[in-house]
Image 1 (cartoon, one colour):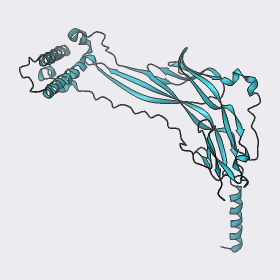
Image 2 (spheres, helix red, strand yellow; image 1 turned 180 degrees about the vertical axis):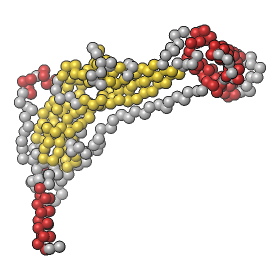
Image 3 (cartoon, one colour; image 1 turned 90 degrees about the vertical axis):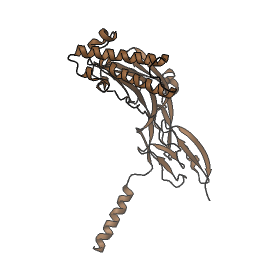
Image 4 (cartoon, helix red, strand yellow; image 1 turned 30 degrees about the vertical axis):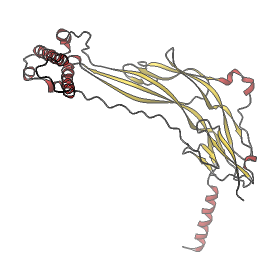
Length: 347
């Protein structure tokens, strides 16, 4: 390569390195809310002989049409931090300040100065669904007469008689009157369990099958101002979570009350962004009250500190002198100081 060209490329590369963004740029967090809902889904499949349930088994109210229903069985809220793009700052590179380490998370939110945050991420509760119940196949427990019955009415009659025989056998075992009594308690339990399984399988043709499954749904909400009954989502007993404009679902609202509003004179003018030569800021969060409504009924109430409802404060350059420096850990949720301690600099 021509020596002149190589020198020019090296010069351009050096200029490019100097033009790169400062590595000490960071964000302070805003406080978001993760609403976690456990939703129970019930699916009912009617039995093929449901119409005979009352006649042969004296069962009333047995539904003969399939249905699916949803319901919210629990609600919890977890505050989390997200980068606030209106609070982007840059630490000074001035060697007068003894800042040797800056820890940020993957999104660029500041976590610690001159030390490492012991728990940089917020652990969200994990949900593990229970194992689904395996349904029995009624045909596996039917004798030849039942399987070859000439009509559904005859089949229903024979199945009902088989169920009554099973119940009679179980009663005789419980009373110790069976012809072939088990030798010990373990054999008795095995025989009783077998009879219970047979009855449960055969009863499905009358009562149908019900499957219950529970899932977790998370809805994120970032409060930015006080609101009164803002629509958060819609939920239907028949369809579960719905789109916001789907009137098939009942509305769920959220109300946010900013506690600063009670004392407006004390906070007036405090939200202006300060300036200093160090460039290190922290949040002083405000306090909010959040209520979750289902239509007109309050479901849950929460009180929490939220960074975006407070103010920001600069830290003094004196914390990072030539002889003593400071180790600072910030909350990843609110951006406020969790701990601060002095550390002597090595000579």
